[in-house]
Amino acid sequence: QVQLVESGGDLVQPGGSLRLSCAASGRIVSLNAMGWYRQDPEKSRDVNQREFVAGIDSSGNTNYADSVKGRFSISTDNAKNTVYLQMNSLKPEDTALYYCNGKVLIDRYGSTWSGWGQGTQVTVSS
Image (cartoon, rainbow, N blue to C red; front, side, top):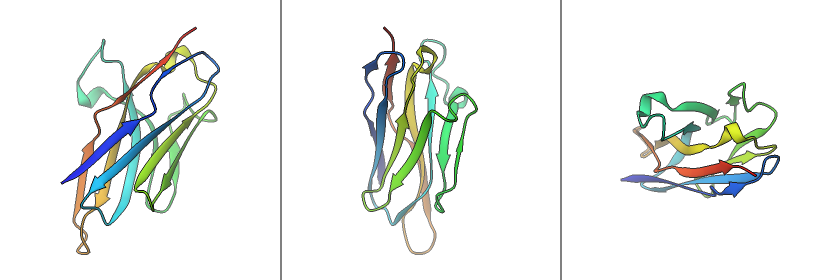
């Protein structure tokens, strides 16, 4: 069984910074593709309506939503099986529940597990 646990969400003023963490635990050989998504729970709780924020693959290639390019940065610490989202120059429209999505390698035969964390709340307000 694999779990993804997010942390780091908080209330921050516009222009501020936060770093979110997503730690993978359980039967893990290595991280494969990892990503961050966000959603306003007051508008929808449909998993299919989560907005893509940033992603990173096993080679370290990254991609970002246009709305966060130049402000957010995704990275991984493979020794800790953790993915981070550094968020700078935060805006009120970045307010959302942030979810970690991950695909991890669970054995030497190439089997993988994919799933979501429980989310961490980011609120940007003065």
